[in-house]
Amino acid sequence: MHPICVTLPTMAKVDLKQLSFKELDAFVLKLGWKKYRAQQLRDWIYRKRVSRFDAMTNLSKPDRDLLESRAVIGCLDLMRHQRSEDGTQKFLFRLSDGQAIESVLIPDEDRHTLCISTQVGCTLDCRFCLTGTMGLIRNLKAHEIVDQVLWMQNRMEPDQHLTNVVLMGMGEPLANYREVTEALTRLTHPKMVGWPPRRITLSTSGLVPQIKKLGESGLNVNLAVSLNATTDAVRNRVMPKVNKHYPLESLLSACRDYPLPPRRRIFFEYVLLKGVNDTEADACRLLRLLKGIPCKVNLIPFNDYPGAPFGRPDDETVLEFQKILIEGHLTAFIRKSRGRDILAACGQLRTEAAANRLPVSS
Ligand code: SF4
Image (cartoon, rainbow, N blue to C red):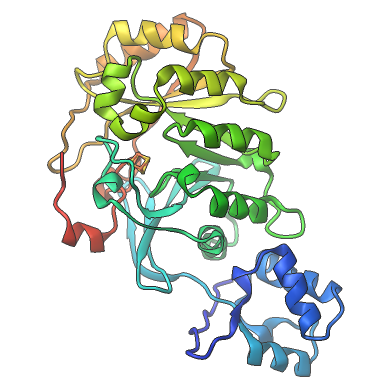
């Protein structure tokens, strides 16, 4: 089912996707309707993913006309779609204010993982990441985050479905805490999108206070931490902004205290940068740092791009690093690089608009 998106009118109608659970209840009551109607609307919007009121067949014609006069169901506007040689697809969306974000769909055997954005740009300026070169343009609203999932679910072939959502696209999710947690609430709420939390992973560069808040929120999504160094000296070089505020000791202490549901692990992402953090000594230090934390490590050989300030280690170095971790009884995977030819791989997202405006800094 492909949505036919309505064009937002100039007069101020309410976009129903912008409303929280309670706000939609209030909207329905304001129309003079019974509250159960709000759930009918939620089913159409989040489960059946329609974008037109005339598709809402369990509402009478006068009710649909009333909705038409008072509300719209906005949706993302696709600007560009690219497909990588390996099947990874990158989608560039225009937001209602003209800003742009990217989402990446990564097919892998029987899985389809969608990587979504949470900010336009990012303030944190991690040195291996292209998004960081944009600076922060603005935070996404909850509905703009959720809509990336709804849009993609509509786009899937009838015999396919999304299996995982990762908040690892443009932006630091925990720097947009309120909207991101509202989006996660909508994604996991059984009366809204209804995704199991264990199929959603939030990736952070390590904002310690927000990690603690997320742990207390009861949202129960997976946590991934982008670590990328085993000493503060190297992390200050690679992730200067975040490590200045939250050095390794405080970050790892927050991870140690993070309340995990049974059988869950924290994922540590470790981008391997040639000659910077990829030595045998780094691997041994990593083992010591993560001792006692229920976790898995994803090793990501750096995805270079034109003008990149780092290099990609050779396969032998990557395998040796993994071997040391495994021999130290740590679960460690090497993440296959996906979509490199269309700059859709980890750390390579930056919207075309920004690319035209900003130089790639080192
Ligand atoms: S890695 Fe994440 S937190 Fe760091 S600059 Fe890129 S988007 Fe921001």
